[in-house]
Image (cartoon, helix red, strand yellow):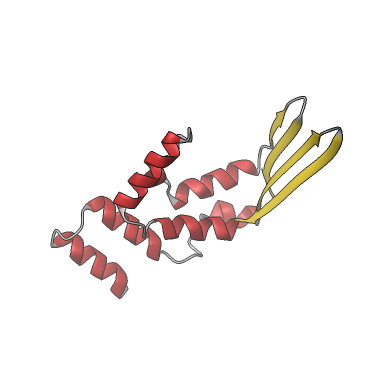
Length: 136
């Protein structure tokens, strides 16, 4: 058992942190190469968001390619953010109409999302735009 892991478990045993906080800290110190075998097999490296639109009669495109490794790192780093800060961020997002709970974001859920995007392309069509989200 490495020293960081032991220190977290000791803090839990001493009552300095609760189980939820211990889980978040343990998740944050996991090595980056602990992605599930299924993800390593697919070889997906990017989450892609493409928006084709028309504005004032002119076609346009937004093409965003986010490295999956960056998403994984962000999820792991979120485990280090104090719970009170996450609650405030959740409250502000809710005020803006974004019903997303940052305290529930877990690395394994991100891996699951990426793996499922291997099988499906999410497309949203309207008279004004087309949005596609997929992994590659």
